[in-house]
Amino acid sequence: MTRKFVDLSIYLENDVLSDPPAFAPKIDYMTHENTFAQIAPFFPGLKKEDLPDGEGWAVELVNLTTHNGTHLDAPFHFHSTMNKALGHQERAIAIDEVPLEWCFQPGVKLDFSQLPDGYVVSAAEVEAELKRIGHTLSPLEIVVINTRAGSRYGQPDYVASGCGMGYEATMYLLERGVRLTGTDAWSWDAPFVHTAKKYSESHDAALIWEGHKAGRDIGYCHLEKLHNLEVLPPTGFYISCFPHKIRGASAGWTRAVAIFDDRLNGI
Image (cartoon, rainbow, N blue to C red; front, side):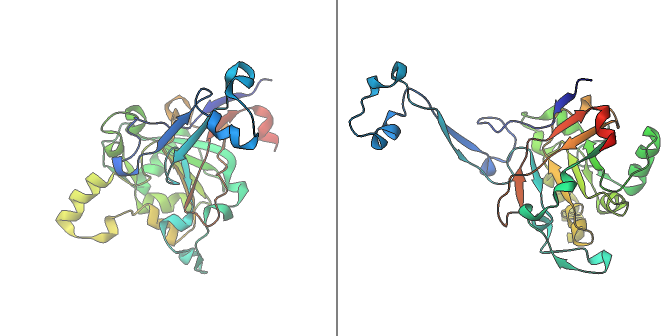
């Protein structure tokens, strides 16, 4: 049997609107033609023409936040503590402390792509979607949310696109043993521009980042800026999303991949 892989990650690249401008990645590309000056100090007397075809190496200088590109957020990103609802409030773990078993598990896709931008998904809607696809959640399954934002990646409205997962919807998943979730939107929560309008009317700060803040009660991780979720079936695949090991960080970049292989069911 041949394994099938689906890339769930966006590119890290210049000049694509994947983040607000102030937080955009910046990549400087140095090519074979212009890196001789980097090589010469290692080898006194070396001339550029001495190198095969006169070429140096290719290397890139990358300026990023840990939340650029497809990345995994750690509980530490959401709040300083976690697991209050489990009766043992403790220090929130950073990305280098995330259990590896959270990052390779069967995947479940919930389709909320029909919902309008800024909509906040409820627990009842999560339950209804699980019923529609005929699935009962098991502990540690990775649940990913297909929103309208996936179709807007790279467009000017991407950061403001897609629905968000509310506190109750997030807790519905966590209370059933889910510890890693994901979305193709810029944020697990509704886009800030929509939440800001609600806050201006109610001045209720509990509306701000409500899905993220569920991590205060039960620690969990989520993937943001996923890609290609629309091609996935509701179930029948694994997700691999091991984060880069950055000591004490709030997030880590990951090459998230969906893997289809019946042999994995025997793991």
